[in-house]
Length: 132
Length: 361
Image (cartoon, rainbow over all chains, first blue to last red; front, side, top):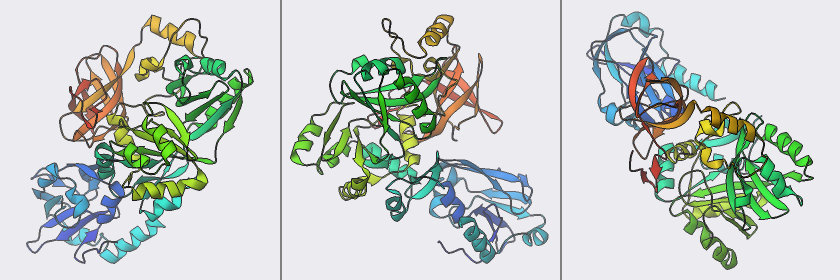
């Protein structure tokens, strides 16, 4: 299994969130999730300026096999989206925790919502239990 | 517990991702479905299709029986080894299954039907066969490996003994020969040249490994689905079922309304043809980004239709689909994707020919 970077927090639905030094939060889907989906062929991104609510669907990733909603781990205003994914959605397959990021939000309720997320060990346990 | 083919452990050792497919534990991919797809279009890939149901038919009246059972005409089969694709219909002309039938001798034909429909197909075939004194034998001890792609035949030939190889090299399309313990049919479900090889289970792992050494890339059911859809081939259960007639499933080319042949479903087919067929199967291509999926609503000027098989075509780099739409539908339609109406082109399929996008696509 791929190493899960220690600075990430997760939703049970396999999204990751990373709090950056400037206080924004970068969001993507986990390496485990991209493995389940298989070859990605389309990503429907949110728009810069959208307000997203934690727990709500805010993007869609589609593989050849299936379409899957991406749920927001943290509420806030979208400040950047990874438009490179439009032409190269497979970047998520190749580097889910790095170049495959999906969007960035300026969080509105970070302290509280952050508590709800899983740390890397808890997330690793979750996917372990799902596999058996 | 899902059923396993004799190659199950081999797939797992190759790192296959396994899924349940109609009660069978089968490989969906061995890493990348898209790479496997391209391998078949450009070189050679192989699929374990041992879950499919092989049925041998024996008896002096076998041809007469098949003239009654099938909507296509086995009278076309005159040379031993020749194969025919056909629908097997119920009395209402609904499709019970689609299948391939091989003529081997006047008293011996072989039929290959789908895995997911086995439990209804066998009783149906047996029930009809009894009236003709035809013996129906399921060949569970046989496995099947499809080797497909422009280099597939050459790679298979390299593994055959000289006598069998000579036979295989001169096989025409849709004809089978036997040798080296194998039943080698120049058929497939990808739109590429190649073979479907029926092999005794005890030889199957060895054959698979030799093909692997010869440079044939293992491919899963995921690639099989995108390949067959690009090639314009129907999938039973998704593109047609017992509530759909061949006229409505783009399968008119498989129906022979010849003189007096009394096949099951004929009367209903003739009636529907005379009354007019209100729904047709068409191809769709979406030039916008996104993926067409089974079940999405198709909006046309003449009413709604629906997507049957939909996918992302690795060869075209865009989404394609089969849809059932009102017969009057013209060249344009829209598909409802998560509440957004996205324009699509209505096209004739196949979408891909000889490994390349078809001219009009």
